[in-house]
Length: 229
Image 1 (cartoon, helix red, strand yellow):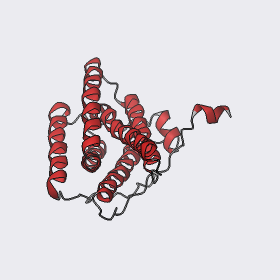
Image 2 (image 1 turned 90 degrees about the vertical axis):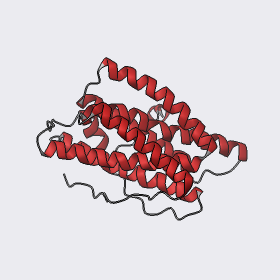
Image 3 (image 1 turned 45 degrees about the vertical axis):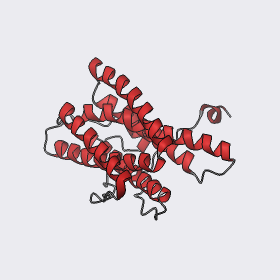
């Protein structure tokens, strides 16, 4: 498959206290992930994608409630953030098939998810701009991590296994697609989320949203009520 174009040089330079807090927090979590997982990128993806799927749902929930209270339009934010959460969950479902999580990793996921959910919910209430900037920096690091994962595959340190069936169906990949193809589209997804969240933070700061990387095409997961209609 043709690799989706990704601008690997994109980085939002921290401006002001809010951005520096977001950047410092992200780098602290990056150091923790590097220390815990080293170069086990498949297992890293399983744990981190459970965290990555939280912000979109939190942001969608809080914006939904805010729009109800204010009786105003959401400007498309709610659906965008819910789609982001769904997309990150599909990343998780894919990498579970590639790297079976251990019972210890499952326990870590449960603890980390609760702590991060409560933290991010509180942060979004206090400063939604900082919250979106945190996610933007998270996604910058995700793009870097998946780029390293690609190098591991290309250099033979990680086996380039067949793409899981769930990934082929979701991204419309060929029957002979491999893990490398999956990592390419996942990295493109993360670049899209990176730009959307930095753009939302910019908008909340009164700045131009900026360019958003295209999101790779994927199957729409229709609600049960639509399937039954």
